[in-house]
Image (cartoon, rainbow, N blue to C red; front, side):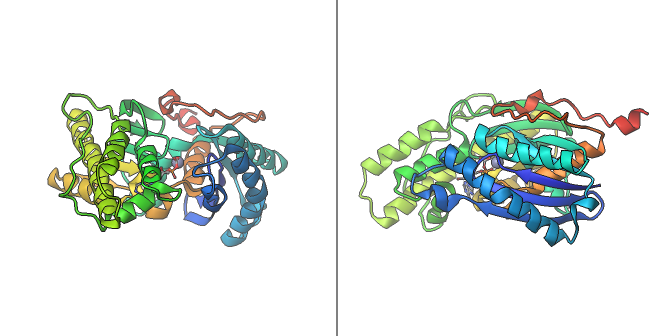
Length: 344
Ligand code: KG4
Ligand code: ZN
């Protein structure tokens, strides 16, 4: 089955073609980073308008890259939520309409399920069940995954998401949007022994997170010290170490609680090198394995939507003709995927 995937939930227009037998045939990405940079964050209305401009040209480019016309497609998948409502509506309207015009089935994909399944774009694919750490700009969640759509929430952030904490702290430090990767790059030059940040909520049982205090801790540390380049790098390093250690401690607990030996890490923050290295070391010690997508598929992209959509379309799922989006949509609302072909 060959599926066109469209992602427009935030500030990236992503389009891809995924073939369930041959794998990824094409993927195109346009990032709106420059558009929003002057404002220090995503401006929803500008995001929607830019998706309007970019989605159709990217679809044409993706089909060309795959060397096919729409006649060779078997379905269309688009991100249906969660995300910015205007941005989501662009991808959903275009995806649903094209599927109607081309007489193809359509399916709406949950953005976080897309992230969660993204490691399946790689050769080294996780088998079910596994624990998933989803760390993006909007979510920090530990999820027990028994199968596609079979998600049990083990813990989540009670305030800022990990990526949000990276971005807000980066802003405090005067770094340009998008701050997370810039803060991580600055931390490379930092000395990890100069400042020690707390590891929030690790001193009590449970799998929830809280990252907003780290931002305040960073603000206080900045105010109490000179803001020379080395000090900024040292603060960046201490902040990054605190977030990474906290995530690693909770992953260890989640693996212990479930008894699972496989960990999937996905979402924008999974691009963080230190997080990957520490989780890899943890799973190695436990004779387990950690899985993540290649770096370009950690952040938002169309490939993960095409893949998740292909799996759901293959199982017989179909979206009715109405264009629907869910700006807020807990992933645990999804139902375990039932393959209607198996039931016959
Ligand atoms: O998944 P994503 O592209 O968009 C959302 O669905 O939110 O994640 C974006 C988030 C941003 O907060 C960004 O700062 C963070 O991922 N991020 C990073 C790194 N690369 C992206 N955070 C820490 N280290 C990185 N290397
Ligand atoms: Zn995302």
